[in-house]
Image (cartoon, rainbow, N blue to C red; front, side, top):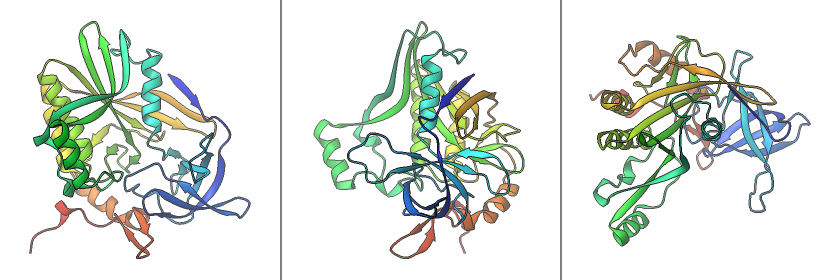
Amino acid sequence: MLFLPFPEPLTAARLLQRRDRFLADVVLESGEEDVAYCVNPGRMEAFTGQGARIWLSRAAGSQTRRLRWTWELIEVPGTTVLCGTNTQRPNSIVGELLRQRLLPGLDDWLEMKSEKQLKHPTSSVQDPSNADVGAAPEASPKKKRKRADASDRTTSRLDFWLRQPTGDHYIEAKNCHMVYPDGHGYFPDSVSTRASRHVKELEALVKDGKQCTVIFVVQREDLRGKVRPSAFHDPNFAEACRHAAAVGVRFRALLVSCSFAGLTVEREVAVDVEEYDLRPIAGWVAENRDSTGWIRSASQQRVANGPFPHEKVAK
């Protein structure tokens, strides 16, 4: 369907540790140690073990950026499969597919915009205490309240908006890196109130007469089954997807193979939003705990790899 090349050859390295969520301590093939930017706010389940083979892109053209490397790919442990780790890539992939009119049903647009802004009543502002396990740091609660009070509104953004002959169409892209032994892909790998909010926003837009689509981008070629909202990692997100699908939000997925040259969109794959047995997933998550999350510099402890709040049984 589409090939997106990397601007220049990637550089091989080994992962020493993922640190403070957005940093990766690495050792290059030359033996030099350095720090790369980890463009992935999630837990990166199974991908943060010491010694993992990874590949980095060189930061280009920025006068303000402190780190010269960005973590792009990882060799899935125990395999030769390459998986994308940069969560900005799915937006680039979906954006290019839309611009080239390569997605059936989304190819007849008359106007297209990215980062479409939505306004909401102040009452819908998310409680900062419920911030995502895998979300980038947000403004402090004090600053949020001040900004919302100034206009009596708050805003959010959806990834793409199309004006089609049939009306407005809103699109949200989501990165999926987790493929379990059952062959299915799962998103998210952490509790993501942000992702749930986006799906609920799409549901509200559909009820208002708009068209809406969620597109999962699986950045690894070994997917054999479908893509599923992960009810084990985030039951609220899975439930939100079922409700949204029931009112007409569409769910689609793309399989992307990764190489050292770039990313290739191979084909569309099915999405399954129905309920399924969570027991096997619990075991796989437990197996991956030592290579999930990140090291917190202040304590030198691994975090974001423990049981989820909904796993804990009240005594």
